[in-house]
Length: 214
Image (cartoon, helix red, strand yellow):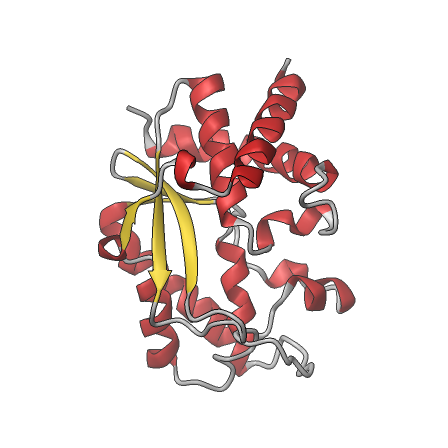
């Protein structure tokens, strides 16, 4: 059983390596290296991280999926989904940064306006399952503060859900973010149920990470 401190240490150490490898893989090379984990690729990131944690550290995790019925959605999707990992009672989210897009902080705006420092840190979050609501509330508070202080430029965004929580009350943001990380909303999502292309990419990424460790 991995402790919270152990997982935080491992994920902090692997973050730059994971970003580097994702940035060189054919499936994700269009995203700048420093923003790989701020993008909507939770399926791939969790699959790769799961394989790495098991192969290199013997840590078993379960992939979980949440169909985000209370969150804003893209124009061509009826509902968004989010994938995280669970190790015993610890939740691991390597792509939480993507949800700052709800207040307008997309990876493109972060690049164009040099404001990537506004994202919550660390890039890979580890927190106890029973503290998920606390984590979501802190996330909502961070998003609300950026929204209230106009830290994110008012750029025209046509692709919902980007920017769809701008100007909304804190309670509205809190409800949405709590729904994203509510453990009760998640169900098992084993790797063999993932798109085959993502499965293959995850295998490539895990092998590349292992080579960087050697």
